[in-house]
Image (cartoon, rainbow, N blue to C red; front, side, top):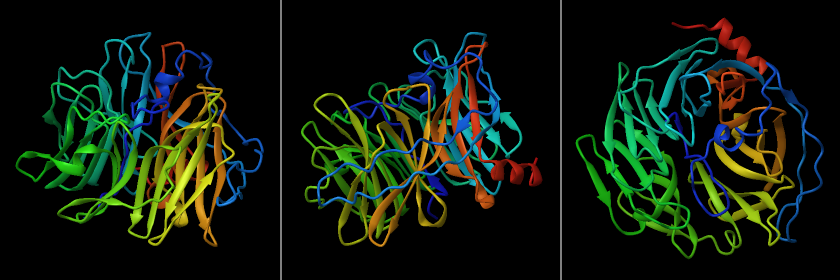
Length: 399
């Protein structure tokens, strides 16, 4: 069974796949008096920038997300944040993250039903924050800590440590089934201290060859996994066919880009989120799309650092990002293919607080997003929601 939502690890800065949640990047700049509703319509941006072979069309639309829940963890002064929002069923999700980034920290996890946040008990003695998660059902959930170097598993009753590594970073996680789970540990500059590991339901096996250089991955099925691979010299797209990892030809599509996330809806619908950094340090979001035959690329007009990709409504994809000139704000964008061309629109633009992840909220068709705001306690982990998602959550409240 394919995962309900296979979540890519958080994106970092420039050429590294470092999991820096929005609540880390923006903690120094957020407003102390964060408002319960902080969305505003996005400003109109200029047309996308690119060469003649790239689609130049884009539209911007405004949409409102509101703070649906906030939770402070740890002693006063701690900054808390949710790095991941993982939908596991209709009006059912997990929010995962951590506390006190940059200092003595601890992971956090909480269930969310659209109205109530219920903190979970995690194994004792864990440090750092949860940066990544993937699920095949509400009783088979996997979570990883990039810098804590451990993987957790929830079996429907309790969270347990599934695997630890002494060194390196965990940069990606993908669950296909309870007996088919992948962990990736290659950084964006091609350093593979942990490398790639596969769990077969009994033990973890180290993967050699091309698969050992994977940073991020997205699952279509057990024999169709798409991924970003990194070496000290270059990036590439690779695919697992159930037996072997093989390179996917991209031509010049990746030239000058730094890919950060990948989302495969099918073998004919694969998205890659990247950035293009100029010599002066300016950055633009870039989208690549594979339709089963060819790659299409779009350099958007959005000056922002890329975050994550998520499956959106109507075959679209959702994108989180952080404006390059304002770490204190968060963006949600939406992209789709229109007559063979890529079109990007602004879904929401927060004045205060950071967004780290976004997902369609079960059957309601609304959105949930995870992140954080700074407040007088130090900082609270936050779930944002569209009004439709909030209303559906109240109507469909579950225990």
